[in-house]
Amino acid sequence: MNPEGKRKALDAFAVRLGEDHLGPLWDNLGAMITRQPEHQVKPYLWKWKTIRDYLLESGELLGLGRESERRVIYLQNPSLLKSGKIGYATDTLYTGIQLLLPGEVAPSHRHSQAAIRFIIEGSGGAYTTVNGEKTYMERGDLILTPPWTWHDHGHEGSEPVFWMDGLDVGLVKTLTGSFFEPYHDDKYPLSGPPDQSTARYASGVRAISERRKHGYPSPLINYKWHHIRQALEGLSRFEPDPFDGFAVDYINPTSGGSADARLGTTMQKLAAGYRTQAHRHVHSAVYHVLEGTGYTVINGRKFEWETGDFFIIPPWSFHEHHNTGNQDAYLFALNDRPVMELLGLEQEEAMTENGGQQLVESVFTPETV
Image (cartoon, rainbow, N blue to C red):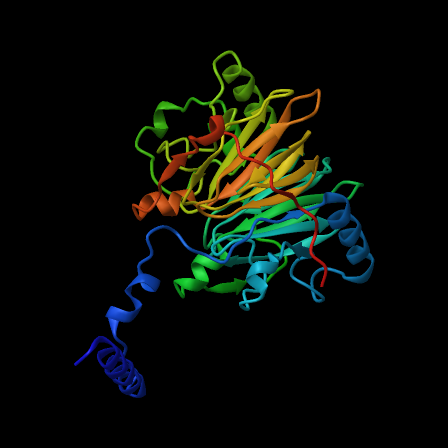
């Protein structure tokens, strides 16, 4: 049989296999096991002013409790909406921005998704309760809500509070492990005075009675911004990391691992005028600009950011950061690195061409519907 005849016979054979819900691996191996990571996630950037204005408008339209569990506007990556992934920032990560108004309570519930809260704006009376521990929230704080822990939010202050919610919604949905349960009351009972874990663990030391405690979840639920900023100032005495500047991971103080076992969290400081080298990694990330102005180049495209903005780094995408301001810039990132490392999938690669800097081929502009 000549090659053309053989190909026709194989194509006809594949059709017959398909009729019985079977398939020929020889025709599809390359699509199933790719030479490098392939995905539909595209980088995107959202402006804080736009999000904030929408949230304040939603505060006039929507109450909490019977009307809604939470008042949240989520980041929708348009590249994933096309494939029906509603509420996805990346294939694994969800990010929403939540508004809590004075006097409100966001009712207690629990779910199998891991969650973090990063406080963007507002202080003085807003709190989260996690399994009975109440912790007050201030700008720049990171608060953990481990999977299947009861949590509610309340506000005893006088100004609106905004924060970033990060959950592994896509990961849990793909693994078909999603569970959700509302508590029978708005608030879960308190188990002691506020901020117990911060008083016990945030100093970086531990009581000797804690020696035998280790593992997951982290006993510390609120990583205070002033501690993180102090750590970054300490790092500033040394050489910056070529790809991330001065950067720290939030960790579990009893194990040394990621603060959350599935969600990675980092904070990086870019000194005024500093630019990083380009690299790429398997894990995806959602960035929030806590302070500063600059831009990030992702696969040759320039994304200009300022305080409050959000942007996406897709998997296996070359990226570099530039601080264009005259003050230090601080970038918080939510990522799925812990899962990639656990599964043995994480890899990193530095760009070696052009001195480790990308050529800017285009500048990001928002898509219109």
